[in-house]
Image (cartoon, rainbow, N blue to C red):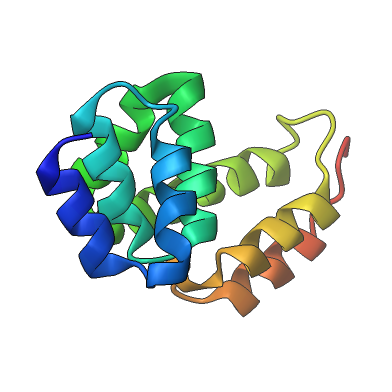
Length: 129
């Protein structure tokens, strides 16, 4: 692993967590992807594991997320959620899991300007009508 990766791990992670981070990142071959994971994880070991799983599926996602930045990712999340909600409200979605969407909004509340309003809107959707 390149020195700049190891330096970032040393800087961002507690000494007790560093070997776990290195082990996780060793499953990734590209240093650009490793650095993107570290940048997005912001010192959180669980985030390193989750982002590594995402990178194994498609490393381009992780590179895109790191390039976009947190504000753009949050805006994109809210825009996508609102698009799906609008389709469900219009009856264009046959099966709409409102409880699943509510949990998704709750889990990502910091990405939504008004999570309470979005949840209320989801609760009013009657699929198939």
